[in-house]
Length: 77
Image (cartoon, rainbow, N blue to C red; front, side, top):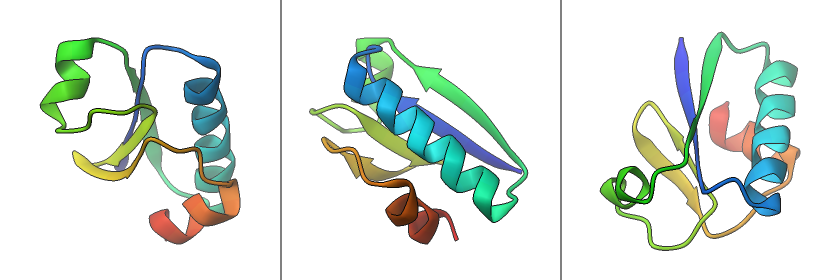
């Protein structure tokens, strides 16, 4: 099971990233758990300074942008 984490304070971009990531993971048929990380200290612990961010199993894949669901599929696949 993949642990997918959306790193952000809940802004519109964060919500869009969560939606695109959910679509990508579902399209790939992944077994995953999604978590929203909203605390600034927790987000900074990942080493990113700009949100939103996408981490999978603790590894940051995207920071500071909202890729399309097709681009996220490539990252998750």
